[in-house]
Length: 164
Image (tube, rainbow, N blue to C red):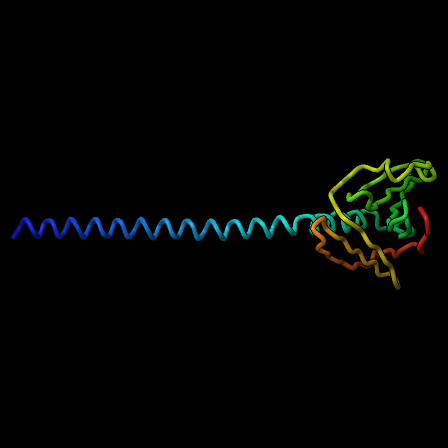
C-alpha cells in the first residue's frame, strides 16, 4: 500500500507542477500581447503628442507682445516667432515641408528658403488658424491621424502676416 500511495503522491506533484508551468506560460503569453498592443499604441501617439508639445512649448517660450504670428511659408501654414537681440530682429519659422516639421532660425529678411530649415520630426501636415486671439494648431501624423490643440498666448498674437 505504501508503494502505490507514494506513486500517487508523486503523480499529484507532477500534475501540479505541470499545471503551474502551463498557467505560467499562458500568463507570459497574455502579458506579452498586452505589452505589444500598449507599445504599438504609444508609438502611434508619439508623433502627434511630440509635435504638439514642441509647438506649444515654442509658443510659450516666445510669448511676448507681437512676437507670435501666423502666416504661410513655402506655400503652407507657418508660425513666426520673433525676438530682438542686440538691435537685430531674428525669426524662428515653424512649418511643414516634404513630410517633416521644420524649424528655420534666421535674421529677419534673410531670404532663406523653406528647404533651408532643419527637420525636427516626421509630420504629414501642420494647419494653423487664429481667431480672437486663440491659436489652433492641428498636426497630421505620417499615418494620417490628426490631433489638435488650442491655446491663447498671454501677450496675444500679431495679426496674420501672410507670407513669411
